[in-house]
Image 1 (cartoon, rainbow, N blue to C red):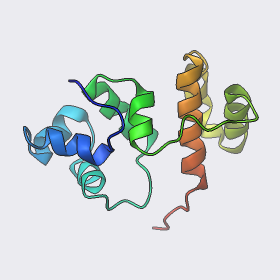
Image 2 (tube, one colour):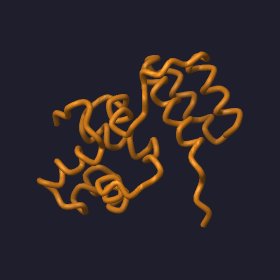
Image 3 (cartoon, helix red, strand yellow):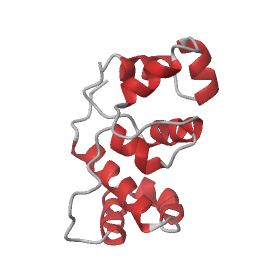
Image 4 (cartoon, rainbow, N blue to C red):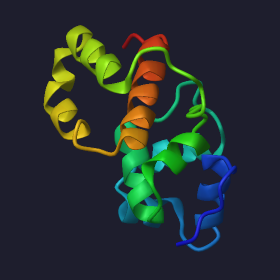
Length: 130
């Protein structure tokens, strides 16, 4: 599927909804109906998780960096500390990321940078209490 840059995730999902229902799209992407609806209707004050963005990137057959940009990540922002160092700091604060971090380190630097930027954004967002 061809996806044009500089569009929001809501726009991309809206395009898919011209061909599929929410239930069909959820089954095809592996992203829940509720998550798709929240992204489409821009109800979420929180950004989608990295797992959701990875599934959507696979569905649209585009690089993860493109989906991260559509989700609002600024990948052009300068960073004083390298992506590997920032990833190490994230793992130190959140040890459950360690298994994924091993895989992330094998990625091209631009993709690693995008993932680290997204994880840092997730970390900065307030958590909802159950």
